[in-house]
Image 1 (cartoon, rainbow, N blue to C red):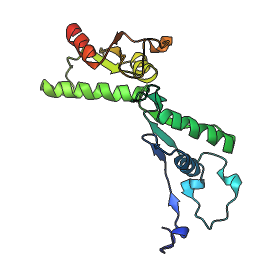
Image 2: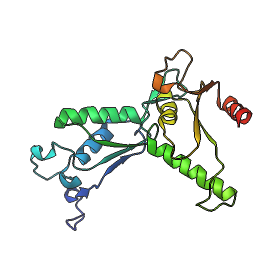
Image 3: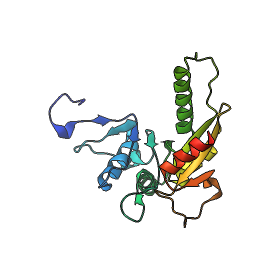
Image 4: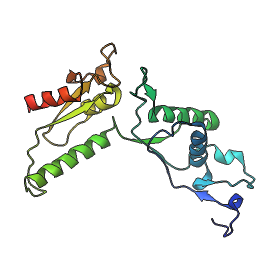
Length: 210
């Protein structure tokens, strides 16, 4: 509160960035409004109720938007896939463009983006070295990383696209127990190395081919 009083109407909220970790289920409308208000407010300062503003000052993105795990859909109890964070981002992006006539810039973190797989590989290498009592400068013994997932567009694409900085081989395994069904048509980018029924069959495959 920059005005040093207790009147909530006079409070100023300033944001350096907006981070979306998950979709704000079950109600999206208020969250979409807040996100768009924040990322186009001058200096990231949301106007308070009493402010008189120039709407032209709110026609561009002023602070970064980070989005984690931008999957469009996920599998739940209902027979059809449910919308998730990627769908929420699509709504935010579309409305931001409508309101400002500019494109929303988003920094994505999560599958299928490289940073997630890089972090996973580095973490596994570090764990392996600790288990084998190796120094950081020593070579590790990991030969293969198996990436198991049910979503071809995120899990499988990410594993297929990842270019390792080491000699490790990545193997993508798609399970039928989630989003993917045999009737789905796979884009060339999403074709896995292996398709199995579920996680248990994936583990069996790994143990047989280790």
